[in-house]
Image (cartoon, rainbow, N blue to C red; front, side):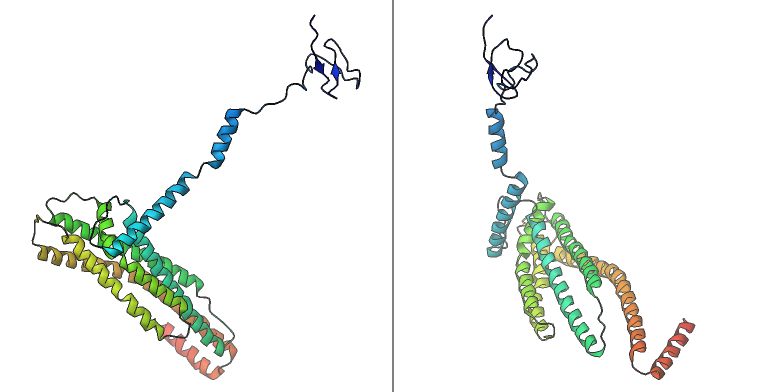
Length: 314
């Protein structure tokens, strides 16, 4: 029999190969417990390499987002320098991203302005009473509605321009996404004006209503740039036409006016009813608050009787 060295699994003492008990601690040395101390787990080099590579490997989604944002900013600067020049190797979603940024800044500007006006209204109300009105929910709903409205408006501009360019150009092969990039490159200046107005809105105090005229001055070129981009995107670089360019532009403007009119009617019916209901509730609450507070019961009794007669008729 060949003597092989083994160790006690309990205390680690070296024992003879045929020993049944450890002479030091008395641990039984059965076949199932032999040499357990010798069986040390060894690290797999392949597993270590894979784990190290996994821990150092960058997030693919994050890397794609970084590349997209960097390329988008480069494209945006190039279109600011040369709006009418088509940029090569443009991502299909650069145009949509540019429109969404312009809309987001515009909505943030309106929301900030609304908060300033609400603060001024509450300050005035606080000088008369000790109550304030929470306009936060209304401003949030109006801002969300404005965002949807502006998105639909941009979709109308781009879609109509694409349709009339396709109608005008016999050799038209441009996809909708490529045309969206073309349209956006012509209107990317809007983002600059929107950012200027947003910064002015942040710097303007709540009671300084004179500064609103300055903001409107910077905001006024937005519609001009949008309409110029709409017309130019229809006729630019078109050599072989089905219709005369002048009549194509005329039809495009008429179609745009009708589409925007329908959008404004729908938006007015939805938003008008909501605002009217809110103002009616606010007036009713404010009226009963003043009645409880202090301004003469005789006035309110006559006022209340007039309201009751009005409700009787309607």
